[in-house]
Length: 270
Image (cartoon, rainbow, N blue to C red; front, side):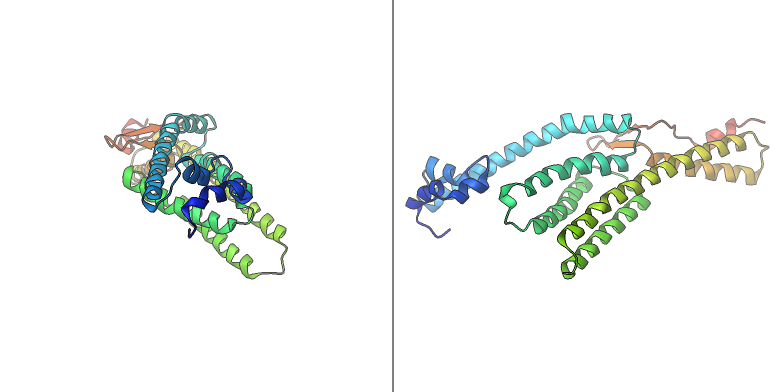
């Protein structure tokens, strides 16, 4: 900012826009009136101090999320009997998006490039948060769910590109179309969860019937295949927390037991 340090305090207190867009903390007043910055070195030191304060608040946020939000999220997911993908779509997604929605509606974003900011935030979350998760904690990805989510992401990107070039549609129509995408995505996730649990119940019934049937080589192969498929489906229907310190997996099951093929084959009746 090419402005004399002696007049920056007066500028920060008399310009209405500074008070209008800063909301809770007026950083210009704090820097140039409270700290009385009069040279470049002091300005850099104060900026570093603000950076340390930011890191301190970030640590507080981490502790709050780790000690309060995450356990509550796990309990809510178990009470609602939803798997980790539905918990991410409904609980985590809404919790992450609500602050951004409120900020975008604030006066600070009245004349700002809100859509560009939203896209930048989404890119940051995908790259920074996703990369941090991959680096810090081991995890398991379901290929079908990831492919479904990437298709929806690609749909949104192409739809936004189309709306940027299309000028015939009214802005409220474009906004309504984009808002409808999320309920559709949520509905598909719910249907996918229902079909998953229906397949689990059907496989368990088939396995129980096969356990009571006479044994043969082909029979055992079919039974083993169904048990392996059941285990894979049940892993997608449970909340899994992978501990990074000891790499010990704790599983919060949503109501089903994992089965081992050999145990069921040897325990069948008849």
